[in-house]
Image 1 (cartoon, each protein chain N blue to C red):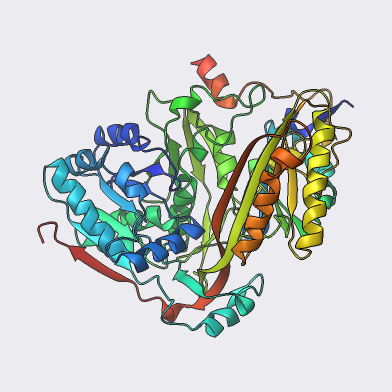
Image 2: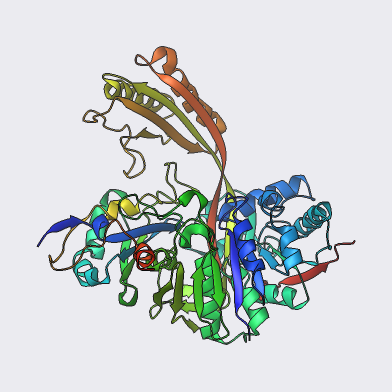
Length: 454
Length: 124
């Protein structure tokens, strides 16, 4: 049986609109079963989409599809490349209608679009029932209203949709790796208990799901880890054979690099226990995996082993957690660090007196911000810099407290140390998330084929 | 034996799940694996992250990949949806570990400034 080719055109919702074009060019030049996957659904994204859907039942899908699909859709349909993406988010049906509209605008054959639903369990389990199933914390027990609760579905419904002739499969929440495993189960007819092959397909999906992170993205460290033509980094293509052998490569003529080091970094990315990476369809054991460079930008990955699928499915539950307020101000020139130090102390002193329970964080960007533990206020006396940008942040379920902090920072203009400059302030609604383990019977995946002509 | 910063001989990448940090550490030259295994222990990494008060640090060894996977619990100030810091994902934290000094044998080649695929390109 032919090899299966799977390209990845997006590793997150903010990924590049044109990333898929060279991938589709490369896939179109080949024969056999070929797929293009899009991963666009971070933990919080789905909850944000759920809020949008409540306002408008025709929306609630990932807006990323609006900019990511038009550059490649017509070409994929012409070349017989099937598209699998989780841009359905909170509303796969509406996403399918929108994709049909986009296809009509582009002309050509109307696509056969399938949706995969059934991940939404917000109506099946109460707040208390979800709280009882939370793992790694107990935030749901005291949380405000739940906005979304979604299981991670596996590869089977995606494979079924493809078995029914879908050109495009639009899902809500599925395991990211299932976006590759689904096509493999469909094209290679892997059994649902063929654990080693399911493990290999899950590994292929894991290597693809972050897009350029396996081809030189999130990798370069000039002088230590140089990446050629990072600006035009090519997104990955996996070649998978019947036995589960994987080769990771990228389109010819693109930037980036695929070598042992880019692949191993991504192999272990967010994997936790390498002997038991839990996916809905299989438990993946990476401990015997080997990686070999077989040519320029070609890496063979072998040795994945599978253990039976876990008894429970993971779900992500999101709830409202108030607002995040951030305000920044700059101090520059001689004695800048002393003036910034004084500004931080002024804001902290005033707020301690007026809002004693508000927890404030102060960062000195360029001096001590991301790596430190967040001192409050930071100690800038030894800082050798004449350019300090202070950042103040706090979170609260009471927006008035956040406004009070931002007002205090802005007031530094006239009432703070000399030369305070460039205040920017921003308030962002905050969603917190919790993980639950849910019994499998709550997962009832539904595959629906939508005729593009309807 | 010479002392080098880990960045000279190894690569690292961090990712998150909630309040848990996952840190992959990969030897650029597999010949350095034993030296790194002996020196970059879970305890040493926990010490580097002491300011963030890790609840637990576990190191998983992957000799076939010349790599290690560290899992650090409760070091992300609540995680990306709760932290009020700038890097709730912990994406920058790999560089804390790459600053660790390690002793390596002088007869081992240090692989720096060139990736393996560049060397393949040079051969072809």
